Length: 259
Ligand SMILES: NC(=O)c1ccc[n+]([C@@H]2O[C@H](COP(=O)([O-])OP(=O)(O)OC[C@H]3O[C@@H](n4cnc5c(N)ncnc54)[C@H](O)[C@@H]3O)[C@@H](O)[C@H]2O)c1
Image 1: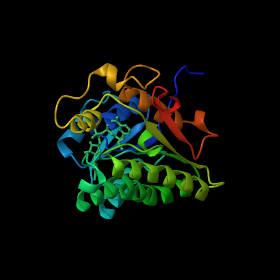
Image 2: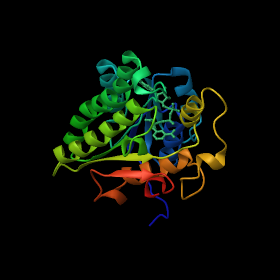
Image 3: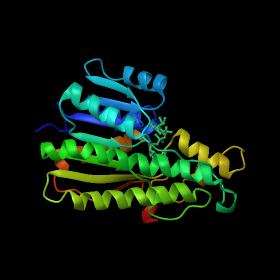
Image 4: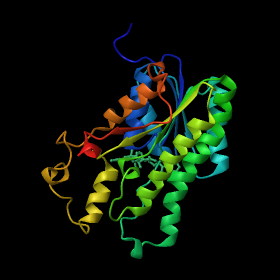
């Protein structure tokens, strides 16, 4: 038995693959033997992320917008045309939106966050599920957040969108009862990333984010998380090691939600 989770030959579609968590995840899944379909709307960064994969990795980059039904249809079709199956779907693209109090939040900006974080996740499942149901197997992992578990000032729409991702995940798991398709989500905490810096910087009124000891004082692990630590949980949920795990929201937060 290998001492690491292996995903040899599995076809993994990952959205938001040019971002901090997405790029760490395609790297880890490829290292574990998966064939990768990397999706993002930022074409140049997407190609750069795919170039970083191990030379032995089989990978396809598809530039698509997850909020557009045609774009979603395209990346699903591209995956099936190239590899003949979708075993793993990491439905991860997301945006933080503007960081503002509700009374100052422009409606258009509010809708934009819901469009990516909720509609994008819904559309991904809508088009990947028929493929997996036909195969009688598959693992979908959506990216929620610990912001989907409690309220957070000035990111109300982000928090609402991530609560919605958890609801979509649990409902989809029920809908797939007895099918061999498992659906879970991950709830990352404070991950060392562009998105986290953007949120803290905006909350600090455009000034430097608060010092590290302030940021981590409510995290039992006393540090930020790394994108690779989210990727590890995705690899687990993607694998047969998680064969009895469905409908769950996995926190990857150094204990933040236990505090
Ligand atoms: N960074 C954190 O601390 C943190 C914590 C909890 C949850 N998350 C969630 O993790 C996921 C990844 O976050 P990240 O930190 O890697 O952020 P990121 O901004 O580095 O990556 C997000 C990626 O999604 C892509 N994307 C956005 N809108 C898209 C669209 N319409 N179509 C296609 N691609 C689109 C972006 O181009 C980007 O590459 C997000 O869902 C985020 O909400 C992040």
